[in-house]
Image (cartoon, rainbow, N blue to C red; front, side):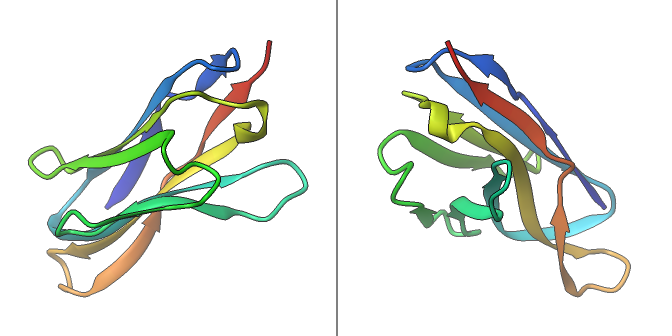
Length: 120
């Protein structure tokens, strides 16, 4: 099982980006998924999560600007980021708790990270 993140890039303040994270491998079920970010010199922090039932949770700093969603059929999660600010600059990581078909136990996986830079 692996997670592949994509969609990062350079954007001007006020702009938008959409991150994607696709899970692949022998997957039985995907439980909660989420996005985290880590800026230079800072600890990794939670951005947003969504449960298997669709309940979402956001960091205060992104509430109202970012939207997390998931496509159950494609085993893919998304992070729509609007009204981006320079302080949103970071490496963004996706995370998912996945039950694989090998041992049927929930295991946490991380994507490889995708750089988001907000600058004029």
